[in-house]
Amino acid sequence: MIDKKDVEYAANLAQLKLDEEEKELYTEQIGKIIDYVDKLSELDTDNVVPTAYTVPMKNVLREDKVEDSLPREKSLANAPDKKDGHFRAPKIMSD
Image (cartoon, rainbow, N blue to C red; front, side):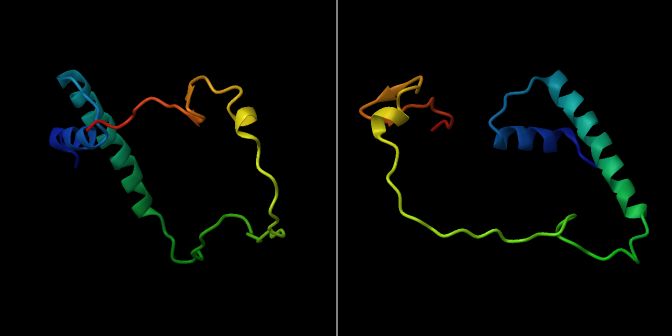
């Protein structure tokens, strides 16, 4: 069973700051999800053939061709933020 420490650990890995109310809520919700998923172990799968895909898979190959790339000015034309010929994006990881 999941406890509040597990939720705190996962939140820390995801760099989320949760208050006590959220920790309690997520502990309860994740616990319910895990209990529901555990019901799958009750299924009789003895006559079910293991498969990686639910539909037939087929490789679609094409010839690899070298072509001219999009000019830098055109690729950056609609960029909301750019600098020195590059796309700029907000920092998403903390130090």
